[in-house]
Length: 369
Ligand SMILES: Cc1ncc(COP(=O)(O)O)c(C=O)c1O
Image (cartoon, rainbow, N blue to C red; front, side, top):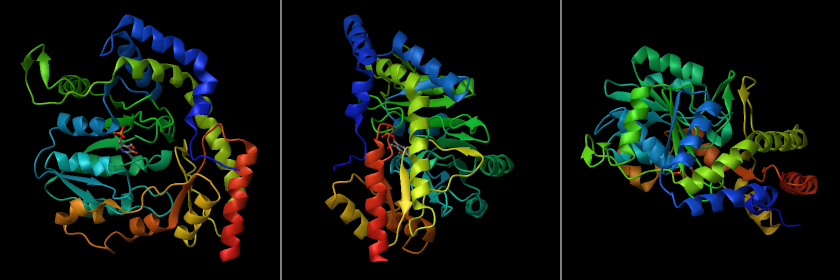
């Protein structure tokens, strides 16, 4: 049996009747940039996340970049974040000439460890970017308390976490701004790149509206230097259809996670740890295993889709050498990077496929242990 890590063709087949007409509608209208489809989708996301405003941009990366710009983050400012995330989180900070300050993770959730944040705050710290990794919120209550005490802006990197909840509040509505990605592999994925910023701050929403069009206030008059970073109408149309299914898909992922959790309980495989007060949307199901590289090679040989998110933490990336961090500085992130592996979790997996994945992992781990 061959099991893909993610099979978006299955998803498309299940909603083709809804998707094809809206794509045609956009093409017929020939309105590809801005327009009613984008405005409608922005409103739906604001409502879904529980914020006043949502502003569509070209990608999750730009959502982070433009949020930082909207909050006035600039050269030499320090922004605290996790090294165990997709590159875009820290890359966006560095692109502004600001300094990513990496704080190690909680080994159970893989999210930034709030207990370690305060020691990283200096007079130059302006913001914190917690990442809701794999679809589970970081400990936002603790993070907001620290940020409030130190007057820091909190920008949630919710790229992997649309619909995730922390103590009943949705990802993207807890910090000062939330950043989403609609990259195709996300729980809410478009047919290309796309992103969104959510916020309750009207002034910040206005700034992002301006920054996504080069910083214009009105046509051909510019009050800031921004970017060309708009969400296009085709993506908005597709995403509006998919949003109607998101709850079912995320519940399907959670049900699949519950199956794996049960299979891995009491074995050498460490299943993801979900905090009781969180709703986890399982954008990824990531297990910790002994001899990870051997497990990875074995699953590939068995044609089971799997991936390493992420093999090298950001503080050890070549481009961040000037920060002067070395191996051993952030041990939990380094350990997670060498011990974890992501296995198929998408909602349309069959029970036979999941059974095969779980059995293959367990047989290998037990045999080698
Ligand atoms: C945690 C995280 N942050 C940011 C991004 C960037 O999003 P995009 O790929 O849409 O630019 C991603 C997407 O992969 C992500 O997973």
